[in-house]
Length: 355
Image (cartoon, rainbow, N blue to C red; front, side, top):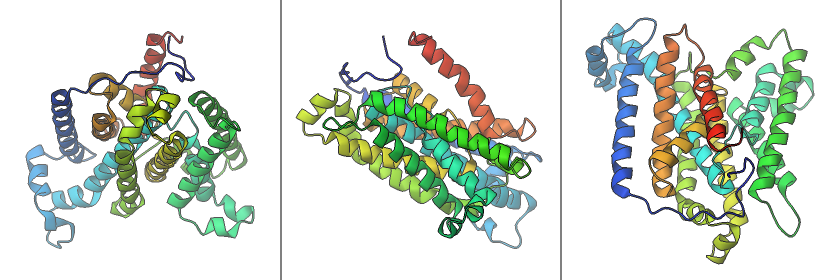
């Protein structure tokens, strides 16, 4: 029976990937992303015909043209940046989930469960509320929202790592997940304290923490795309070590994998990816849990196929969810992904006979 906390003593023999199946899956996911992009751009308070949207997407000069039509202005200035951010947010969260599940050998690990998301959200909330000014830490007040989110994600990650460290042994997936649950609870309590103490100013933060892409613009794009590229590069470099880690720590080490170094590198990359997603969209939950698990089951367990498939799957899920959320009176996309991911998480626990 699969344990919630670990499978450290049960090495898993990696399956040989069926590359034809991976290739077909990537094409299907890419098509989902492309169609979702067009549908999301055409969806909004003033719906636009698909043909008109497609024609506008080919007019690359419309962004800066003074003669742009109303459709071009809506597409290029309002909806396309929102969709682009949704694609990157979904990609980042899903790849972060793959990395964490890979190093912990546990399909239930995700940025939300081991404290990375709540750490980023807490520090971003501190920045939004101006708490850094009140508590007299001027250098924190000068940092931007993305930097604060990254610091929060990194501190939460380091705290998990230190708490799970055992002298002479290092860390193990079991201790990391248990420490992550504890850190998530502690930082969540601080978040609740802020909600109570700053009740008069918390409304905007609560909306932001619900996860939303509403009113995002091209100015938000530099907050996330460099971290997406960096995170994907690190993930690509870790493909072989992550595959070998599925055999167990001892076997991976015997095959030349520096286990603790790989674990630290994957955690830092996951923190970068998660923090950048949180700082532009707030907390969009369950993407990092659900997408990697579905892709691992349906497409490939080899990380060479799993990582790109999860990136596309996460992008497709967030963009389609955001398009649907707009039809529900601009519901925050984070609420919709939670409504999708929550039941799936319960199903996952039931299937693993954990409940």
